Image 1 (cartoon, helix red, strand yellow):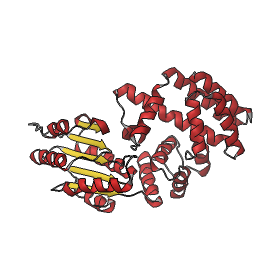
Image 2 (spheres, helix red, strand yellow):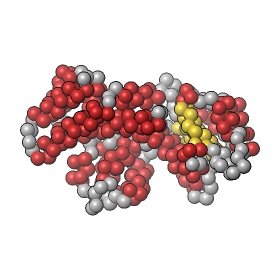
Image 3 (cartoon, helix red, strand yellow):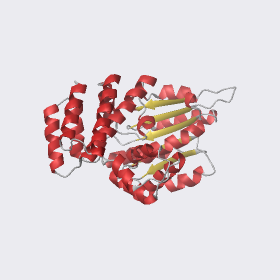
Image 4 (tube, one colour):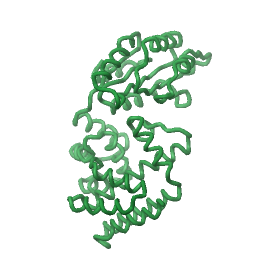
Length: 333
């Protein structure tokens, strides 16, 4: 089944079992998140992450029946093939318990080639058959699809913004819909139509490898190297506002991970980030987020706010960035 077929299917039906795979990793997480609340309450949903997947645990969960009609949902996020035997067993459990549901998000492991991944998902899809059972191969979203997702989310949030500006926002994030969706959240407090100036002021491009290098050096407390790279980026034409925006997004993302893990004792990338990055990226995020304390986050955001105000009001000019980076290094020690 294709994404188009799935959209048509969802207009009239709800799958009991779904297998999502393919190159469109954003869509895999997006549709899982879209369908899950319609299948079961959050407290009746169990998520199995990568190495946590265990056939018997999922099988026993789906094999439960309830006299009160409770609906149980199991979501499996994996980057390794699930055997045909396992899939058949899980589908059999669902056939005996029509109130229960299953979603499998099958991502490509970075160590596997595209052809190996293709062979694996075709094998899984070959047995993922039955009534109210769907298997969907997703492809990378195109620009129009990305703008459509942003427009839908903007409408949900009550944000007034022209599609042309949504396209600009998406381009600014190198086509990464998940990051663009996070940026969109910033405009929820604007009681008017969003302008291009608003986007330039609040959002920044995060696709630069060099900016990512700068962020890495800051979090790893390599102050001298960070200052040197900052100067290099300025020489290459990266504006101070772009650098500040990248830092704001970076620390905001780490703080979201930090708060979520403190609240729930675990990490759910889809809930926190809106998409599911590869396991090694998630591991790095968790390590970086937990390398800081709550007081440090508070001081970091105060420093970034101070930096933004100086840019906005034209205070300090060239020394603002260096001052802020030095202050951040002191906070992170």
